[in-house]
Length: 129
Image (tube, rainbow, N blue to C red; front, side):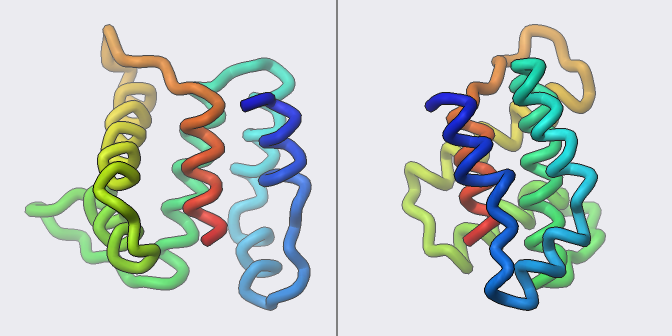
């Protein structure tokens, strides 16, 4: 996947057709600006952090997540995406893998796998669904 595809398909598209979409743009505009910045700097790790922020923001907007010690927010987000979007087991595994990559980046875990632009695009596609 080319960086220009991500820019055109996910970031520049504000989707002004629905009120919810417009509100979503305003709720997390910082993350979208940072994704654009990371595209110009070819920084997939930074882009994934912000793409996950987009996904988390969208899930939290539509569903109240519990602050349980038993289940992390990431697991709740994955569960909600699988339930709501009817994801296949392959997509669910990919989302779990992306969540682990995101946590590795956020907590500076050594020897973590590096995300690709495809991972960023997948996360953004789920956020827009």
